[in-house]
Length: 302
Image 1: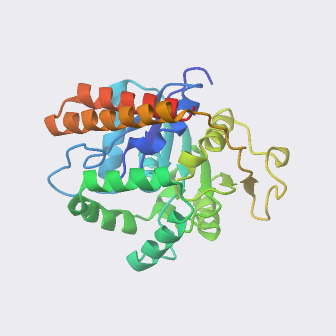
Image 2: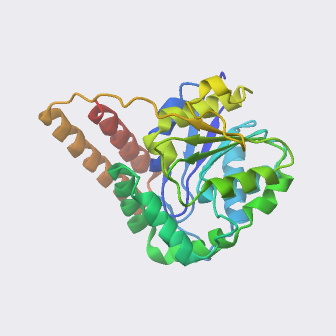
C-alpha cells in the first residue's frame, strides 16, 4: 500500500465524523483526507443548492489543491453519488469504493426512502444516531431539504457505465436503504467486473460500527486482491457473487468510571471548540476541536 492516499466523502447532512472509526484503520496504509461538503459539518453552504456534479467538482478541486495523485476515492451514501460522478469525469482515478450506494432506482420516492431509513436506523449503534442528530442540527433542515431532491433524482446507475475505475461496493446486512437487489443492479451497470461485499450485522453506516471489516475490504481491493471464498463467512459467496463477510469479534472495553467521565468531558469540550471555529470561520479551531474529540473517543474506548 505505501503512501497511497484516501479521500473520504460522507453522505447528505452529515460530517466527516462519520468516518471517525474507519479513518484510523486506513491511516495504517496511507494518509487519509475526510472531507466536509458545503453546508455540512459546519461548513458554510452555497447561496444556491448544489448538484451532485457540482459537489464532485469541489471534491476534485480539493484533490488538486492537496496535490494528490490517484487517491483511493471512498464515498458513503450520497457521497457515493459524488464519488462516482467524480470518477466518471476523471478517468485518471483508478480506485473507487462505494459504501451503501443510493438511491435504489426502483424506489426513488421520499416516503419509501424515509421508511427504509428508519428500518436501517433500528440496527445502528447509539453513537451513529447521536452523530446524525448533531450533524442534521448543524446542517440545518433548510439546506438539507434543498439538497435532498438532488440526491433522490441522481441516476447513479447511469453514471456507472462511464466509470473505468476498479470498483468495490459494500453494504450492510440490515441496510434497507441499500438492499441486495439494488446492489446487484448497480454493480451490473459498470462496464467491468465489480467486487461486492455484504457485512453481517451492519446497517447503512456500516463503516462506523464495522470499521475493521470495511478497512480490510478496502485494503484488499486497493492491493488488487479479489474477495475469495476462504476470506468470507460460512455463507461465502452467494449466487450473485456478493461476498458475505462475518462480523469481527467485539473488542473488550475496560475503563474506570472516572476515566470514562473524563473522556466524555474532553469530547464535549472538543465539540464546543469545533463549533466555535465553525461560527468564527477559524479552521485552526475546527481542527483543534476535532483532534480533541478524536483523542477523547480513542481513550474512551479503552
